Structure formats: C-alpha cells, structure tokens
Length: 185
Image 1 (cartoon, helix red, strand yellow):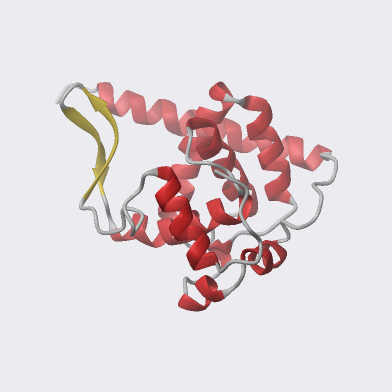
Image 2: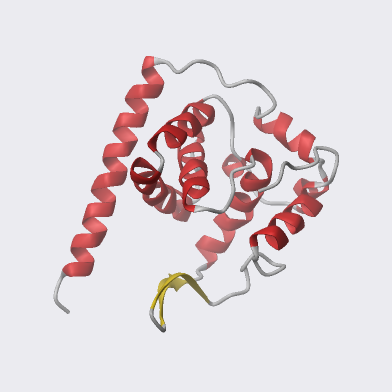
C-alpha cells in the first residue's frame, strides 16, 4: 500500500485502499461468499457473515491507519497488531487474527513480531463501534487516536511472553481446524 496522505479523510483513504488493492468499492461487504483461494475452478472460502462484515469495517480502517498492505505478510502483520491490541467484542476478528498470526509465524516471523510489539503499545478500533464519523476524520487524526503516530518502544518481556502465548493459541487453533477438515464426512 502506498504511503497514505495524513491530511485526507479516512473515508477517502479507504476508497483508495480498496482501489489500489483491486477490491470492489465496498471492500467486499456486499459479497455473499468470500473466496480467498482457488483450487482450480473451485473457490475456497466461507460465507460472508454479519460478524465478518462488522469486523471488516474496522479491519479495513486498520489497514488505512497502519499502512499494512493486503498481502500474506501484511495480513499477518495486521493480524498480529489487531490481536495484540485486543479485538473486543468482535468474535470473528479474534478467530481470523489467530489464523493470520499463525500464517505470520511462517511467512514473515520478524515483521509479525514487530507488528505484535507495535500493537501492544497502541489501540485498535475494536474497542469502539463503527460510525460514519470515523470516516470523516483525517488519516492523521485516526493515527493519533490509535497511538500510531509515536515510535514503537523496545520490546519488553511482557511483549515476548504474550507473543509466545498467543502464538501457541494460534498454532493450536490452526491445527484443530486442519484436523477437523481432515475428518471423514
């Protein structure tokens, strides 16, 4: 994702993010099915639930605020960051960020670790409810609101212990998911 202009509105930045990422103008909110991979002609994904839509509203704004791109590494980074900040009442976010953290441990462990430390020292929007007023703020205001305008402090023992704990949970959840998928129908 290109460096975001801090003076533009979050709504405009989100529209640019969708366009640059090749997403539909609504970011996929209206889709009934989310395909994240194709096995030949067969799309692999899941139904686009209301819980996902609710979390996605905040997740997309997090991409705008953090600058993490919608790539495997960027999704791992944003998953680590979101999980470290806490996902509040957003159950779908807790589930999907654990999977993203597990991916990050393999595709880019150092960037995932750095995003974790950044998350432990900032806030996410998951402590709030989505509102149109969020889209009216400037990107700079949103970054300040979340504490993303400050340098990331050095990692602490607490950061390392929490990263180890949540990484273990993420790997266990992912292993359980694959075990369930392997069960005969």
